[in-house]
Image 1: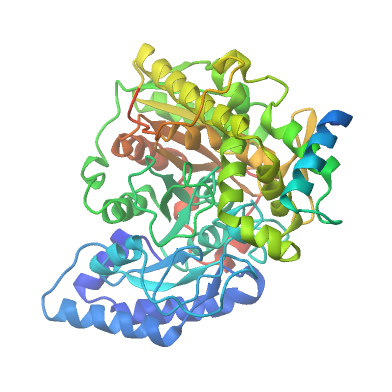
Image 2: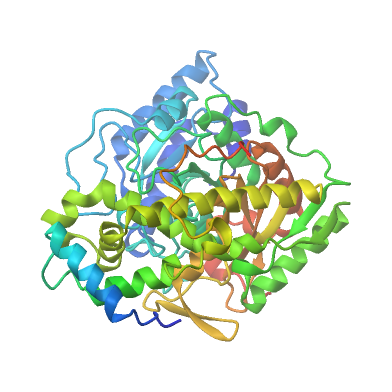
Length: 67
Length: 461
């Protein structure tokens, strides 16, 4: 399964964030990171169907027995 | 090495001593070390001392229960006094830690002999566990991240070894090495004294030769909060079983599909009522799983990422960097998705009046060590994703899940299914797994040494 190609905007945002954290140099490749995030995390809104489009805020402690 | 029940009986009848069991372990571990690397550290003198102490207590009439005198392997992310905890990583210190993790204290209180530290994938974050190799074919991976524990149990070096499971890391090596592996209910087994990967998803549990071995271990690891052993052997006639073979559980290799089908037939023979169910929310399980892991793993390793990035495996470094740049809103959304997915599974179980779910543990058998992609169905999948997509659903939900071997592929490699019960119902999952094991896993359970396995014919499916 090939990694999806991230948009230039997404790569730019990742590069900016990495620089802000001081994570720079050849070990920190913004294109690769953006591709990984796109592949794994449904950052394109894929989760909207489950939880809506908004930030739900910090999570409550997870209790597998709680419903 | 035999099962816990067999060794326990032999110890009490005087057929063997704990020292003899320990000596055999030491010899077999040494013989396996150069090729299979199940353990990263063993201190023979300490193992023999602990075995002698167990013998003295038995002789004096102090019997601590079924684990008394039994050697147990400990994954090398779990602190054990007198051993360093290296986590498969150069980031860690070679100095020994001073205090046992709670689970190790509980094992010692139950009389277990700590055999040593088993090989883990670096930082418990991966499915290869180098330098450990698969005991069925050393050209292949044992799975991970608890790979050494899978190898140690499958080779019969110890009947039980501890693993951790954040996205499948107990069940993956159990399935690929042909052992049983139990991921308990989230929160049931304490994780203090253990190097975390993702605190919201980390579980500790046993890998064992048999389901009974795992049940005995769980009842100790839970500190007496469970009594799963007492239910093993009871009938499951009339139980309702839901098959989940769609969403992240598809596609699978043909041998895996055959193993699942064989297991379903076995459950029907046992009188269970089996139906196929679908849970659409599971399509998003990897987004929830990785959204949580990335953020939490970065929080744990942010200093190392900044100061020693070259000492982190590139694939793991990539995950940590992903966590570094992930907006808080994305992590929050992953946690919210988790709640929805867990609720959807629980609702499906309730609506269909199910006792357990059954699914393939993994979509494929063990990959060659240099192949990071596998053919599954019509596509090629990276093993870092394919090995997790079928196990992560029960990390996200926090339900107990037991992986049981159920056959072999055409290369003689083990295939497995997993049985999951409601959260807190570990005994139900183990009881169903125990019933199934007697019909589909007998070939795996009668294995002794690696040489025995090398001699057995392959080609079964």
